Image (tube, rainbow, N blue to C red; front, side):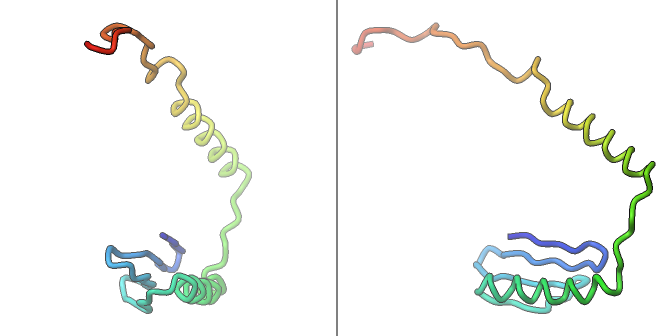
Length: 98
């Protein structure tokens, strides 16, 4: 589990020992084994922070630029020319002994 609210530097993660940790600006706020309580604490702090850090509305130019970047990234990730390997039967035999 990894949750983040970047404007307030709020993070919730799970460590190797199975504890759920909620941190604000690098300072540990809560350490518990219960995911439910960690998520509820994270959401409580996030709601308080959303009041202090209101959402920034994007302009039309910023929206257009974001869409263009997402489209370019999607096209690059799904390149149909590379990555596929040719199916081959070379090296296999039809006999069981070898």
